[in-house]
Image 1 (cartoon, rainbow, N blue to C red):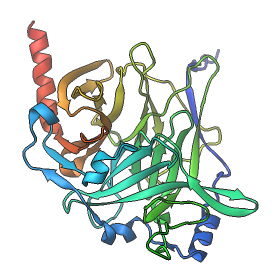
Image 2: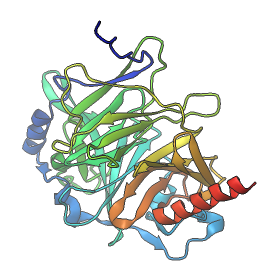
Image 3: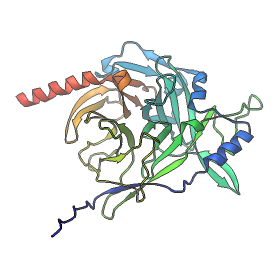
Image 4: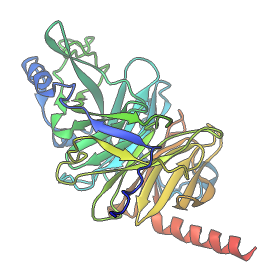
Length: 371
């Protein structure tokens, strides 16, 4: 008698690449080029990091938190802006760029959509790039603002993945970055295919959609944040959801393909059994060698917490980071975990040495075992 087939979990979430893509990026890029834009790619804007970040040379634990080793902040206008809020964080990783870069996603509380910032932490220079969705209106290609929360960001190969909450996530190719033509007079804004970029010099249209689904009886997973886990030979995209106490706060994993920077082809999409062993108010997660590092927030005045361990066995260091920590990324070349904080006048991009967090977690577990 043949063995019974393995049971298949019914409580699962789905993720499938939309085929064909709903976005005709090539038509939008061609129309933008005809309108005076230039397709420069992300490498083409590195010589135009026109904004200046400032380093806080002596991070103060009472303000920035006890785990902060490096703190950068934005120009005054970006630091105080009441409309744009920093969210997702990622790094250049294996992209072939000439310098190490951090990318920080922002969402707009009005109608301006979402964007990301290319930050060179060594030179302390940065530039904003508006995210856009290509659409067709009256038979003509147009661009409209990408209105997603952008709570997670992953740069994998030549692709940039942006968390879109209940929609799943969207992907853009960093080679598609467009530099806009100069306005015709001092008071005019640049306009591109109906898009008013509100002072942004660069635009990146999204190219692919990875749509979220769920099995009957399963609560839809919120794609609140993303990270790339390279603990195993085959990388994985780690997805998590923000949830307050009493709500779900799950983690899920999907395969990622180094050759393309996308999820590998699959005829029926990808399925994951969500892991409920996250923690309330998660804002970001990074995984290194199987160890999870998680940021949680405690409001706009209380410093945030960093948790270290494996799901179900996390220890939290309260007050480790400033108030409002968001997404988290592990950048091995720097030896640091990086996050960004969101609240106006309290906005930093901060780096935390992973080895120091590991030693603190080991001591915390030993002390707990001695009680």
